[in-house]
Image 1 (cartoon, rainbow, N blue to C red):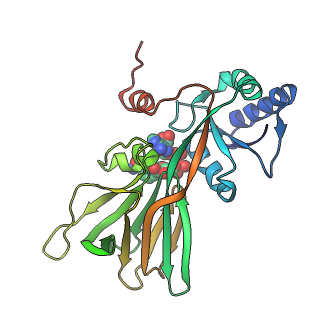
Image 2 (cartoon, protein in one colour):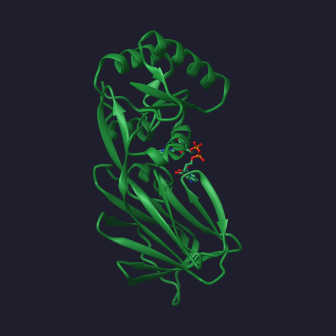
Image 3 (cartoon, rainbow, N blue to C red):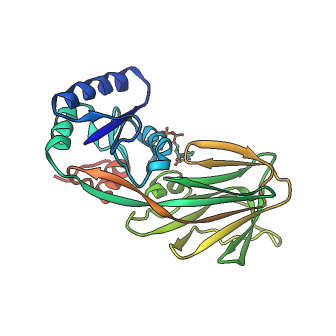
Length: 265
Ligand code: NAD
């Protein structure tokens, strides 16, 4: 088995990465920066998002493992003092691979269509004021949105930005996308449902922009400003992300520990 490490870049994460390399070499694991099978993220959830985007071209061929340097994360389940146990298990045990859905986002411009994926969510906001957009579901007008923005989250991202907006927490085995509004304005012209909407895998939605509108787009932590977008198609991606589990890390336990703050004895 071979691996690569993506660390957050701070002193502790770098030290842990150095220690991991030493333990890994002693256990017969090979470092492979170009075509790894395992991507070890050392830092926090944000580090795993970075690791995900830097290996997106080989997403079908890699599995991710998260080591956290602070609080237990949603993607990072191994603690800093458990590196030895992790390396031993990687050297000797077969992991269970769990696969989570991703969001597929296609930006349509005069020049054509570009495709992006997100692990947590795709966010769209207005730059010069409120965002104005028509939202179609399955090619039919659904609502006219005016407000701060829209967040389209995956099930594993439902506990992130989506949750702050009052969206539902969705188990990652439910292949779906959730649309949540950021501060919508409701009047006779612009009227939105108000609650978040869950789209199943075989549905899609289009966010159709007013002409020349400057928008801030974010794929997880990756931001860009654009003024050339006609429409944005959001759907559940064909590809999935894989996580290697050497011990159970149930979703509802993560939700309970992160948001309710207690352990069940
Ligand atoms: P970051 O790494 O500091 O992450 C921000 C917080 O979100 C951290 O506490 C992290 O643990 C948590 N987080 C990330 N993914 C999560 C998930 N799937 N479930 C639960 N918590 C999760 O900052 P960053 O590197 O810029 O991360 C980008 C993420 O920050 C975005 O994907 C978005 O979900 C989140 N975000 C949240 C808000 C909000 O809640 N108001 C606003 C902007 C961005």
